[in-house]
Amino acid sequence: LDELRAEVERCEATLARLERHAPKPAAPGDDGQAALKRAKIALVGKRAALKKAEQAGVMDSELERLRGELQAAERDLHAAEDACGKPAPELVRIDKRPVDPRTRELKTELAYARAALKKLERLANADAAALAAARTRLSAAERALTEHGTE
Image (cartoon, rainbow, N blue to C red; front, side, top):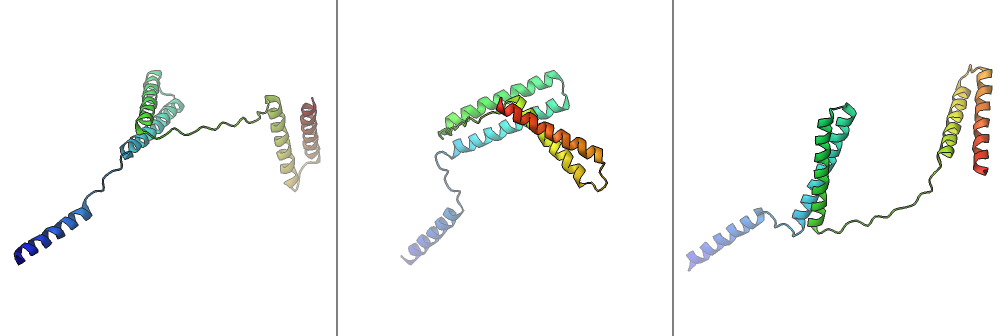
């Protein structure tokens, strides 16, 4: 009887040791989540490869191959999104008031005129004529923006 108890204790100790070192069972959605993550990473890699090739001026045949791989990666991502069971994120689109091109152009000119004047003002030996021209440019830019805004 003592031998059986000792054998049971040894078996229980072995079982406890094995349970501590055994890998944890994966949650049901983990495989889908991992596949989704891999698909996202693959898509980013394909997109970067295409952009790099476009910037390097690679031949059209190579670009077409890379574009095809990018499209395949996009399809794989959509399939992984459908298979993982994770709900798609809710997209919230905000309508920003766009700036018309003329206003953008006038604001850019105003910013450059301010920067040029400040640069000249920081110089100890700035030419008086250059300062006057920069001030004139700035006032003309401000006036043009104001007039455009009141139209």
